[in-house]
Image (cartoon, rainbow, N blue to C red; front, side, top):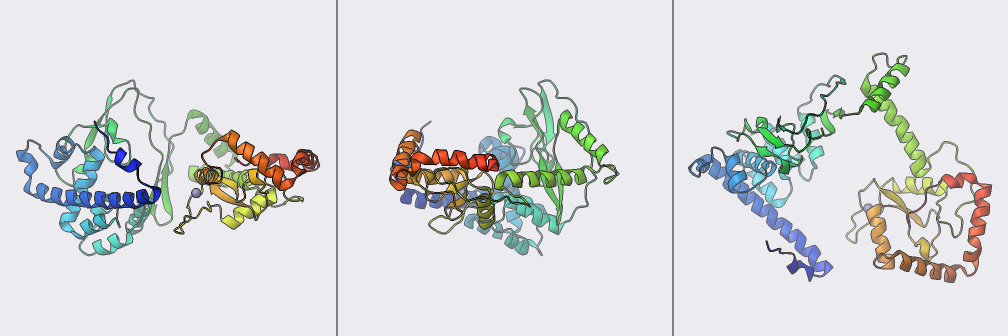
Length: 397
Ligand SMILES: [Zn+2]
């Protein structure tokens, strides 16, 4: 099979950044057109004459769509038949296909315009929360139950409601085909397994405003910890409610993480500030930087978009440490790992540790004169005076 990658290799960065959004718009337009045509094909039941008993089978076997892709497009096609404005949203990219799939069962003549407007540019989770507000569900009872032991290799059947659209559909083959919009969600999939059933995915589902259902699988060791925590907390949580224990455990974990990740403490120790020539970030600098940056990556694109990442954060030297930048509040900010690495490549060119170290040594020598040769001794002395510094996390660069 030939690839079509070569035509893009020669493009400049600026041209490529213009071309990709154009192609994404083309894809949206093509998808909306496919959905519109499927809606008509479905109404005329043309798949029957082609040898398929359902539109789902036609999409999978004739159009070679995955089960999940076929399901989403058929759901959208049938919804668009009732509310053609859906096709405009899909073409413009204001509402995703996943959002349409989630919204479709809830759309009515009265609410479709409002719901589609509220779903614009929303993530899947946000659309689920929107629907939870619209149709609040009661709290689910807390439960802990033993799962059956893993079965030997065999084929198993599971419902599509369990194998959600975002689950890997490549390992599944359809056992029975769709016949109507109402039968689609309960179709069964046949899953050929090499070894045991697929692992159950953790789930967090909004039930109602500010109420969520959480489900996951734990092993025997964690279950024993839960039982022990229930016993130790009988005075405070007599019924051993796992949700209440989960809340206490997370509260304790977050306090511990705040301490290790950004040196949070109620009793900060005295410090003499950044140590020249040291990569270590003083605890008070970590606290100040974390508070100032709001626990979020501070990278801002030329167009003004700030990175939204709150995980994999690192303390980043605006003036690189290798070029003499110090660990001060003014010179340190939060960056996610990809943006920290990206900035390193911009500062030093393609990543080459030895090259960076050589440049760093030369730059520090020029910047500090003889201070670089004595800084390690100074650091050692300061650490002896303030052993708490040993607990401070190292910078990655
Ligand atoms: Zn970032």
